[in-house]
Image (cartoon, rainbow, N blue to C red; front, side):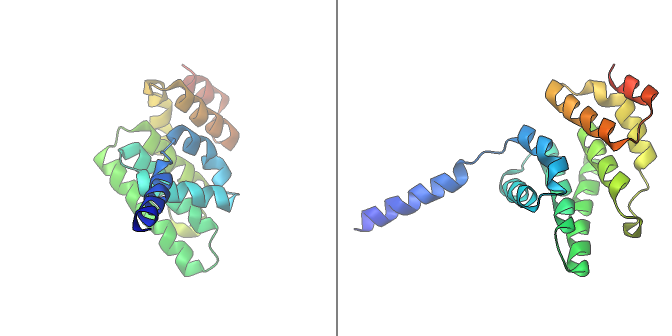
Length: 165
């Protein structure tokens, strides 16, 4: 009987840890997470458990900030947002040439309410993205970022053409 119980708990534990971090899926669902609390919460929990690399942790930071949008209490919202913001700023200080981190910060700052006073780097990050998006190795990642940027209507036609080089 004890062996059966032990096997049962081992199977549950292996099932819970079997879900791997699919960063491409998380990237694709980033814009959906703003409106869909379940997508946001599921990806946030996965990132909290599995994010190890800098870019993974960048998406953890942004999902922490986006999750604040789904909270009711304004004080908890602010604390949640700041938790993600502080992590993102730390990551960018550690790796300022990471294009995805700069994109994440740009996307948050572009859409953050002015009361949060989080918009100081929009122009700098936008310029950095324009100048360095081509350096990303993964074509799907470039396409996800480009699609997001194009939909944000914050880049001119000339800037969008520059991004496609």
